[in-house]
Length: 235
Ligand SMILES: Nc1ncnc2c1ncn2[C@@H]1O[C@H](COP(=O)(O)OP(=O)(O)OP(=O)(O)O)[C@@H](O)[C@H]1O
Ligand SMILES: [Mg+2]
Image (cartoon, rainbow, N blue to C red; front, top):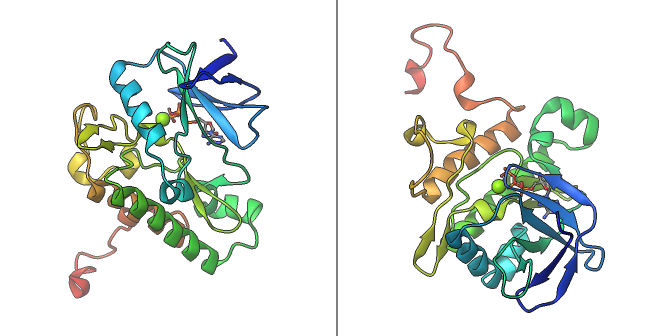
């Protein structure tokens, strides 16, 4: 793959080491911009997704950047070429949230992280979701790998290019999702193609993340009543 791209204004960007790889793209260091990384797509990007990325790159603000690795600029093979990827802030020194809510990983990686720390992480995760929702956007693909947690309990969301984006009235849908964090009403769909997500759908995933954090990685639906009248007292 070519290692040289240009921004929308023609500035040259040389890629360095690959930091991570997903289904859609790979993320690279940029030696000349140590606080930024570049995500390059494995496949060519269709026109709608190019529009989405251009909108995102020009509509990030301080509130979003506090909680998300929001696209900062598009990358192209040449100035007049299509969008092939984008620049975003580099996320370092953070672990995906599942490394915290799994008691085994927490014991190993964050032995001093106690209940109060988990409460702060839960609070900060909720604040990240709320900030996105206040801008009219929806995460859609809530999952355990896209919420990155620092030693200060602050949370940064990654994989923002998959979000459902409200581009001043034009909706760019999120067409992916993980069944574990998908609310009951969206379970069983063949795919998320054409499905408009809402903040409430995200909030189901958020509630799950928080439950996992506060209850040792357990799922709220995993409890099995021991007797047929177990739930009568609380219903
Ligand atoms: N802003 C960032 N700073 C540093 N590393 C990052 C950043 N964003 C992503 N990464 C790394 O690159 C990997 C792939 O990124 P990302 O999840 O955005 O790709 P993807 O192809 O969309 O993945 P998926 O198919 O799971 O949606 C991440 O798991 C992470 O390790
Ligand atoms: Mg993705």
